[in-house]
Image (cartoon, rainbow over all chains, first blue to last red; front, side, top):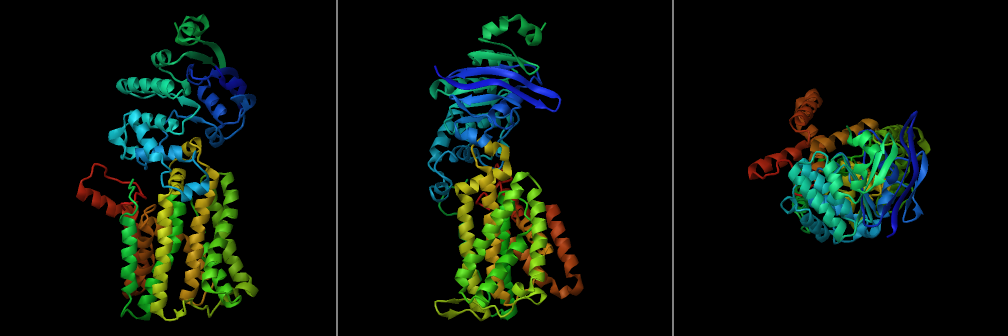
Amino acid sequence: MATVLEVEGVRKQFGGITAVDGVSFTVEEGEILGIIGPNGCGKSTLFNCILGQLAPTAGRVRLDGMDVTGMNPEQMNRRGVSRTFQLLQVFPELSVRENLILAGQEHQGTMLSRLFGARDAGLTAAADRMIGFFRLQHLADTRAGGLSYGQQKLLDAAMAFMAGPRLVLLDEPAGGVNLTMLGDLKERLKAMNAEAGATFVVIEHNMDFVMSLCTRVVVMAEGKVLAVGTPAEVRANPAVIEAYLGH
Amino acid sequence: MNTSRFDAVFATLVLGAVILWFAPVGMGRYGTYVLSLWLVTAVAVMGLNLTLGVAGLKSLAQAAFMGIGAYATALLTTKAGIGWFPAFAISGALCFAVGLLLGFPALRVKAHYLAFVTLAFSTLVWLVLRNEQWLTGGVFGLSNIPRPVIFGIKTDNALPFHRFVVVVTLLLALVLWWLVRSPWGRAFLALRENPVRAASLGVNIRAYTLLAFAIGSAYAGFAGALYAPLVEFIDPSPFQLSASFFLLLMVVAGGSGYQLGPFVGALLGVVLPEWLRFTGGLYLIIFAAIVIGLLIACPQGVLGLLERGWAAVRRRPMGSNPPVKETA
C-alpha cells in the first residue's frame, strides 16, 4: 500500500502558544485514519496546516511523496485533497444540487471552457448520483440554507466527494448530528471508502463513531502525538487512558 | 435552479425591449430622453449588481468607471474621429483593464478593502476629469458628442437614438443573464456566499474576484459610452463619488442579486424624481422617504418584495427564494 499523506514534524505557533508541536504521522492508501484528542489539543489547527489554510511554523507535508507544504487550499484541492468543516460550510442560497455542481465544476476544463462550455459541464448527473448516494433525493432542489443541521452535514460531506478526491479530511463530521443521522453518515462514509477507494482522515470527539469507523487512530494531547494504533491498541494504552479516555 | 434554456427573466427582458421600442411614441423629446437615461443608468447598475449583488464585492467607483467610459467615447468620437462602435468597445475594454489593475491590491486584504480602494479611485478620477483641462476640458467638459450612425441611419433625433439604446441595453442585459447562469456565475455566487468553502473546493478566488469586479466595471464603461452621445455634452459632475453611492442605492433598492433588479432600481433613481417634479423643492425629501421606507419594509429591494408576494400567492414550501434564482 502506498503512502498518500506524510506529515513530518509539523509545528504551529501563535505568538507564544504552540498549538501543534512536532506532529508526525502517515496516511496509507484506502485507510480511514482517526485523529482524537481533548478540545484545544491542536487537531483542527493541524488540519489547517495540512490543507494550507495556515502556514506551519516548521515541518513538512507530503502528498504522494511530493512536498506540498505551504500550498493554498485551492491548490491542495486541485491535487485531489478535499475537506469538510467543523462548522457548517455550505452555500446557503444555492440548491443542494447547485452546491454539488459547484463542488465539482472547478475540476473540469479551464476557466474559458467553463465559461463557454455546457452550463453544468455534465455535472448534473454526477451531482444526482451523489444526492442518491447520500439519500438527499427529496431535497435536491431545496436551498441548502433551509436544510436541517444533520442534512447540511451530509451535504457538506457529499460536496467533499464530488471531484473524486484522493484524500478527504473530515473535521468533526458527527458533531451536532443526531443519532439516526449519525448511523447513516458512518455507513455512507464506509461505503464511500470501500467503493470509491477514497482515503480519509477524520477528526472526531465521538468515541464510538471513531472506534467503529477508523482502521487506525492517532491520539493527540497538548499539540503532540500521544499514541498511534488500531482502535483496540489505543484503547488499551495506559498513557491514552490517563490523558483522554480518563479515570 | 431552473435548468431550461430560457426562463422568465429572458422573456421579461425581450418583452420589455419590445414595449420600450414603442413606448416613447408621442412622449416628446424630454420624455424620450428620460426613458433613454433610465436604460443607460440601468446598464451601469447591472454591472454593479454583478460586482455587489452576485459576487458580494463592495465597489464605490461605478460612476467613476462610467465617467471613464463616457470621456473615452467622447474623446474618441470627437477628437480621434472614430466611429461609436469601436469607441464603445474600447470604453468597455478600458474599464475592464482598469478594474483588473485596481482589483489586484484589493485582493491582498479581504472584506472592505476594495471599498476603500475604489473610494480613493473615485476621487482620483474626478480630479483628473476636472483638472486635466488639455484632455478633458476641465469644468467646461466636452461638447458636440456625435450620435452613432447605424447602417447609414442617423440617430440624431430622440426617438431613433432611444431605440438604439433599447437594443444595446437588451444585448448587454442578455449577455449578463447568460453569464450569471454560466459556471462563472455560480463561482461568483460562491464568492459572496462562502469564500473559504469555495477555496477548499478548488475555486480560484483571486481570478473570479478580479473577473467579477472587472466585468462589472466594464458595464459602467458601456453605460458611459451610451451616456456621452445621449447627453451630447459631458462634464465631471455626474461622475462624482456621490453618483457612485446613488448607483449603489439603486442596486439595493431594486433588489441586490436579482437580474431584473437594476431596471427597477434605475427606475426609482431616474424616473421617480421626474414624476415627483410637481412637488417642487420637496421632491428629494419625498424620494428619500420612499427609499428608506422601502428598505425598512423589504431589505431585499422591490424584486425581493415581489418574490415574497408571489411565493405567498403560490404557497410554495420555500418562502424566500435566493437572489439570482432565475424565477425572479
